[in-house]
Amino acid sequence: MLDRELVSEVLSVARAGGADFAELFMEDTVTTNLHLLQGKVKDAGGGNIYGAGLRLFYGTNVVYAYTNDCTREGLLEVARAMARARGQGGEVDARGAGGLDFRSLDAQKLWNVREHPLRTSKQAKLEIARRAYGAARVGHVKTVDVTYIDVAQRILVANSLGDWSEDERVRSRLMVSAIAEDGSDRATGYNGPGAALGMEFFDGDLPERAGAEAARIANAMLRAGYAPAGKLPVVIGNAFGGVIFHEACGHILETTSVAKKASVFADKLGEKIAHESVSAVDDGTIPGAWGSINVDDEATPSERTVLIENGVLKSFMVDRLGELQTGYRRTGSGRRQDYTFAPTSRMRNTFILEGDKTPEELIAGVEFGLYARTMGGGSVSPGTGDYNFSVNEGYLIRNGEIAEPVRGAALVGNGAQDLLNIVGVAKDLSRGQGMCGSLSGSIPTDVGQPHILVSEITVGGRA
Image (cartoon, rainbow, N blue to C red; front, side):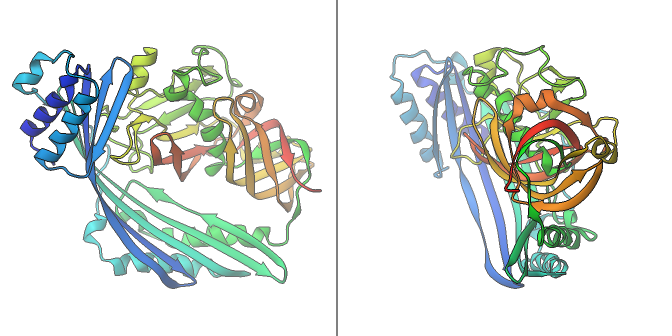
């Protein structure tokens, strides 16, 4: 994407103010978006994100700047401005004067894209959205909203240590929202599968299954009564049920929080923080998974990081700055939305591992409680892990069996406390896809878990 001599010159100029470390990140990203409402095209577009970011470390102090002028003069002007911002009296690395000896990293190639979206017509992509729309028009569903997205991001990361890494990340996703109506009753269902794959992701009947799942939820919840309120045992469904772990526990295992002591887990490495049935990982190496990456945005190879093993805290998610601040080993977790953001420690595919129960066994152990089959959005207090999440699809559990559907339920709790209150983990691990927002922007991540039984969560409802 850029000539090595130019990159060497830019990094050297940027360090003229005495920076300990300089890094250049460049990207060229092409996106396609198609929005289908009631079977008709509402929006069809996309875009191109093109630019570069420069990051300097002065100890653990960070200076970051970016530009969409990636000409030689444009990049050098940014580098000069950054150097001037720190003064002219700093040390200059001896290697910088003679040019850097870049080493191309043996970047792992975890999977291959078979059908590149940039070589596929918009008409073919539109047909995928229409198939999902057709599958969702069942039962009482009156309104269907389908969004198709594909992204092809080419990146280059080079730094003053001589690391040089290039990669292309291709992602595809379909999001279906179905609204069922009958008289004054109204309910919404949603399904949004995605993968780090090309058009082959939509092979088979994936569009039809996505539409049918959104419609199933909407129809199931249409005549549901209101959920009870109070402290109840709760069985949380697999796949997107893992959003609670992601939001209420995952973010406080990132060194962005840990280094500031803004995490309840900051000083608990090696300590028991969860029930012994709980093990959890952040795995960026799953071939084709929505949050997988060959290398992170700092040129560190992605890996499978064990966060919790049999209830004991084993590791945090560590980026380059987090490594400097805490001394913990880097885990390939430095990520950013695009070149306008500096990277921070972020999740990739984060999930609780399988246990030895079946979902039916977990439910059979509950006399009266809530089955939160699919979760919706919510809010979390950073640092403490206190959360509030809505339940999209919920059912009462009576005498160990799933009973009537309920609407309006919300789970109110604390992620760290929930980890200790998980008393059963099933063996049906599944993952769901989402976009995670944090300091370095919005990035694709998988959440996930098997069905789990939490002994007690405060349920917000009406009945």
